[in-house]
Length: 75
Image (tube, rainbow, N blue to C red; front, side, top):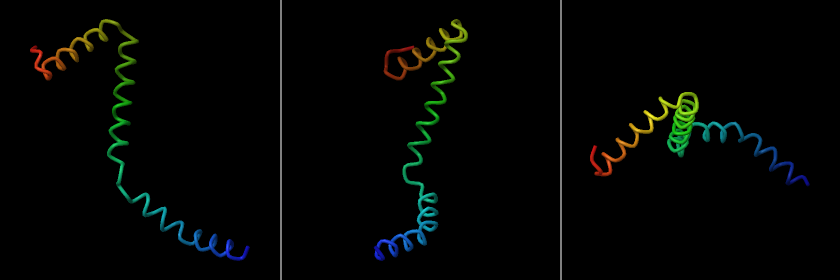
């Protein structure tokens, strides 16, 4: 029981340092940021499409044109 108390005490003493190292680390943040941006853009496009069908149709047409141009389908 005393061993558990000592290990807990030591772990709590190191916790602020480990937390700072974790927060300062940038590993994996880029992917999370891209997912967040993608979700935001998808939400905005979804709201535009739902709010006004003519704007939504124009957006869909433009995106389709751009994608077919990238894929070699011509413009």
